Amino acid sequence: MSNGLNVFGNVVGMPGMEDTAISTFEKESHRAASTAHMPCDDEAARCGDIHGGSEPMRHLYRLISKVAPTRANVLISGESGTGKELVACEIHRLSREADKPFVALNCGAISPQLIEAELFGHERGSFTGAVRMHKGCFERAAGGTLFLDELTEMSMEMQVKLLRVLETGRFSRVGADDEMQVKVRVIAATNRDPQIAVDNGHLRADLFYRLSVFPIAVPTLRERGRDIELLARVFLDRHNEEEGTRKNFSKSSLRFMNEYHWPGNVRELKNMVHRAYILADNELDLAGAMGTAKPVVSGVEADCVTFPLGSRLADAEQRLIFATLGYCGGNKTQTAEMLGVSLKTLYNRLNEYQSKIFNEPALPQRQANANVNS
Image (tube, rainbow, N blue to C red):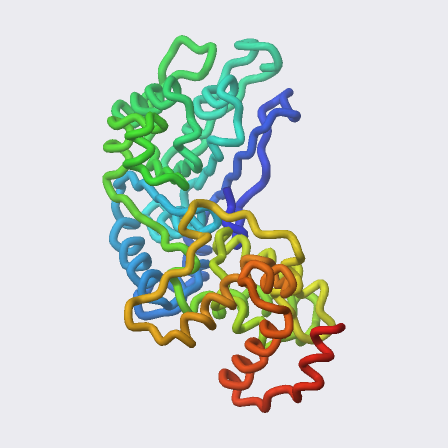
């Protein structure tokens, strides 16, 4: 549920059911704490805990600023790891109810048999293991915000019950006879395309329309340009501050991070920086930190490199080489095999690119040949 940047609160399990796959996060937000970060500004390079100054992110900041002061339900869509929970947290932080609870529930982490009790609560003895009364997410989020992550993983039966609560504001704990009234703003998120999820039967159309009063699409990392380097430096600065070090990125890492397609988005970048930081003495090598395992890619588009018509052949070749190198996790032997060239040719190309990009003298041919044989 987290995007790798920020997680609020403590893990809360259902009473007497510690071994269940429940992942619920809560945050009691306070008005004083809400002023600790700058408000969303479409001209700034951050919005609270969300970092990025690219045009897609500035558009996102504008949407957050518009919807936050309202009570409208929000449906956030975006690939895994893009930061959907952070967007929900910022909407809550900038709302009039920022001093009220923020409760987040990962719908995909809870079994269908338990999610009703986790959402609405249960009375003591209502089922095996219910040793005491338990307040559900709606009750705990009263007056504030309930964030439902991975909404499309919720069963159709539960989607019907959720729709009723959204329409009436009333629900009953499992095992209770009386209904209770609650006022909660619901923000939902999915890593699927919402309309396709409706067409494929993963999301009820009526629930989709009820939640998508204000839809927000979070951009992928590969759409954010220079934000990739900005985020990488944010993560590295945090590690340097925590450990009292002064490590930096190698020039090849800066080049690599702008050519790799980042199928895991911000979460993948954060984890890769952390891994490279642990391995590095002084300079971080992102390609080396990725290892020889091929990254897991989601969808066909992540396996493709596209070029606009009119691109220079040399530029297209350079982009293809860097993209393939990133796809192979920095493994030059595998990259050469995929491209159908010799390892020596690949090293020569990389040497030429380094010389052009950083205005450094190319390695002597004997040294380049030595690199191939090493």
